[in-house]
Length: 307
Image 1: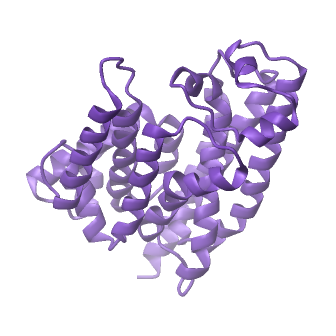
Image 2: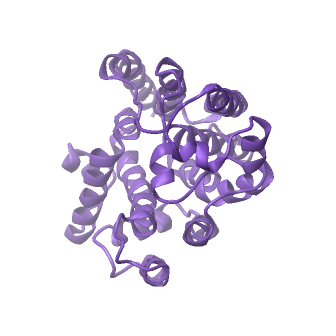
């Protein structure tokens, strides 16, 4: 499968092929839902998507590695080295050549990567956000720009690139909010809370309450509020799927449905996310992905028939 994707993308240099395959393996290992959706894309588009996922994953690992021996200064040094190697297109990690090639191949603005890395640096020094507006500022770099990075790879209907950009930003934010809700317990282990302090105050929840890992009525109401907010962002993002290239729509629609489905699973688990990580089960993933795979194949065949 990897060789088929690389051949379809016209990637022939052995060094680049090895780098792109390293990105694919990272996506397959760590991004179960996202990787499944990626398989709905035409093979030629998949290597770049694997590379963009691996880029974000690697930065996350530098910032969030569970290693008490690493000081903030050491993490900052490693993140700076990663940034430098990315910009130069060599050194640092096996995935760097593929990420750099993707940036050049699809003419993705470097500012999107700079903004992402700025938010990663914020994670090294910021453990909570006072207001929704402050969190949105963080999510511009951590989530919205990921949607913008993806847009040139996915492609848009003729003349729709500019119109699609706000929807791509919203979808990145919706995915991020879903992760924040699902990962409240894991983020607490890292000393962070991504739910705005003003929201905690509204529902009479303190940081200590969350750290006790007992989901009481106030915490349920808080998480229900955050789920409702995330669903509203999903509603804002959904119209943009129709603006994408037809061969990319099923991929993003599947990711949309599966990520949004995590919110359903949180509710089904009675909001028990402080000591448990919920996930969309295999039967539901298959029920969403298999029909999408058939539609994606038809879309690719229809596109090929026009040329």
